[in-house]
Image (cartoon, rainbow, N blue to C red; front, side):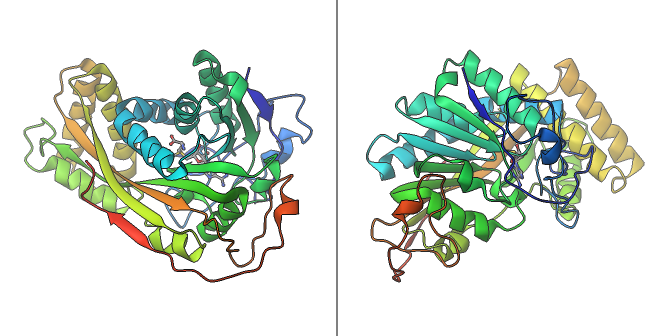
Length: 361
Ligand SMILES: C[S@@+](CC[C@H](N)C(=O)[O-])C[C@H]1O[C@@H](n2cnc3c(N)ncnc32)[C@H](O)[C@@H]1O
């Protein structure tokens, strides 16, 4: 059984309803009556960052978003496996305690629990419906007894929910959502034991093939991509400098990608959800003919008659909290039971970065 700790550790402005996967908003749900902080209070912990796309927690009950994340897990399995390999290689020993920051439907949590059978995974998210989904998936996967969910805000004092310092922290497609990523990185540093590893993943772009999306309207895919880019999608982010500034060393950067093809049922559904959501973002930017063609592409994806494919890029950072004590400015050891570890002096170190660009798929 998955453990649930839906304590709220955030204090943000009121949430916002609706919106896309990269929109904002979260409302509490009657998720666990035993939680000692009411979820109604958590409804006020969501953030509005309307100035930037892709920020804030996922909207409650966004089933398309949940399905998209699960499909992303299935189609991006090789990327996940490579990121886990990188973490295992740098850690050297089996992790016992892991935190998944912005766990969503559980892509990372399930992969981590599967790969590291001695580990307990703490899965943090500010959206209750995401954690509900994760809990069910963890039970189905038979790892529920090694997973604890925490309904908590990464813009708050989230390390306080952790019972101990962790060996491994995982932040996949979530760091760009928070209000102050540098603060979250400093907190992650404090939440890790010395020698612990932080894995951060972000998107690095996507392209569609063929360029007419099978519509016979030359360059439609490029116009869709350009219109999305003008709105800031897909949301990409670069964390190498910020990781160094948070005192992680060394920091490796790996470029990876995976393909989703409409010739498989999963790929077709993934593309259909993505293009439908994207259509709504750029409807005003496309000509009427392009929009009609895009609608026909989405229908063809639903009917199983499309051969469109997408290549989705990912960047994975592997960052280590050095064994020799370095304390990032402003954040101490903050995990629930780890305060006793505080007190070592600040010293400066170099922050070597290994850029693995092009070294991976
Ligand atoms: C794009 S999803 C990624 C989910 C998962 N890590 C994965 O790889 O599939 C981002 C997740 O971060 C969560 N999130 C965003 N901002 C958050 C915040 N301030 N506090 C907690 N969770 C947050 C969202 O609710 C969402 O579930």
